[in-house]
Image (cartoon, rainbow, N blue to C red; front, side):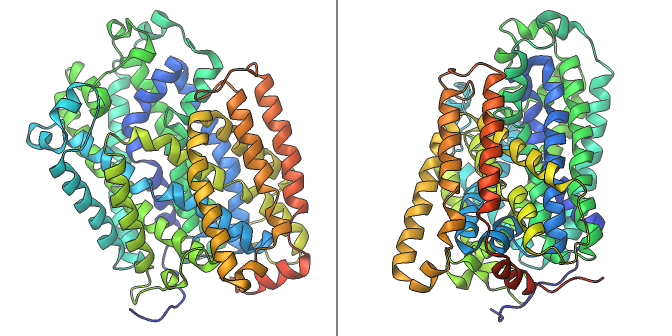
Length: 534
């Protein structure tokens, strides 16, 4: 293993944009049209532009700080510049918990679709499939392990090779969904909408589709471009275009595909409403829908894309999860040895750690990727809460630092982004948030143990900058318990609940900004990152 060195900046605008698009167009494209329709009915069409707009605002906030500080593992490392090492550790840990589930999710999705072919039905337990579950068989677990190893191996030869492979794969991943959406639209009918009404579950259904319906999970793939920002050429241009452009492209693609799915659904399949729609089960809603329409060739193309799409997304997530683990190691929670880059310029040790964690998750959650979906989304969205706080804090701490991309109206947009993040967490629901408390508690315990053993780490935690995160998470936990989503008690009326969440978020946002490091400390941290003048 070579000595650590700065990664090469070899990712161009198209490459980084396709990292964002490739992360979004994965298993979510294959399953979310069904899952979102089950939550919201035809109104699922609204969930994609609603979520897309929210994530564009969030991406814009991150674009300013990522272009100014293009570091590897940005989601976990950027908060350290404004709020210190303690906040960086907390956010990095939560992000890693979500990130490390992504490759196993994509692997499960890929194998579930492949099992539609008789030649691959051995991947899953027959008794489980018959009961509506999708449990990987023992040979299926072996195949999934091979896929995870392949993700790591392809990333091990450097970011330049990775981006070339990913760009080629993403072109195909974009063309096939466009063809499928066009084919579905040729069979579009308003009959399914007339059968149940446009929004049978009201606004609650639309917002549930954003989280438990897989919409947020799909859009969260844009974060991979953020994590590779430190390896981007001309970051002042590349990063904003990649983040915003990637989300915009995918918003249009997913909305059109959802429209085609709704309009091509047979009203006879809606006898139990949209919530009871099980077209194709968990193993292939789009392929089953196309087969029912007599488009057998396209159905097979979907199965092929169902392998290619999640494979590409898994490849991207493996790259970015490795960079995030580097950030967590640099902050002091993981061993420093994990931050070493190989001679190919990749964090191989960190990727091997993630591979081991992914293999464990495959065994623990072998009954289907949907078990991990909401957990993944909740953890990653929660880890994004520092972006809006950091961008405003750095404006005040280092006002003279060159900002290659300067966000206009940052004071308003940062607050809007923080409220949007808080709302998505709230919509995730009580069941997911309560489960997320387990790894968060484990992270707190590990950090406390490390701090006791390492006085230098204990002194660097900046507890004043860290303390507000506790009330923020606890408050969201209480609100999800009292709310209407994901097993909440429904004590808060719809509309009132979102006003309460927004008000709570704005109060905690002010606390977070005021908890930032002194300007001198932030300036010293920022000065360690060379300004890019390219």
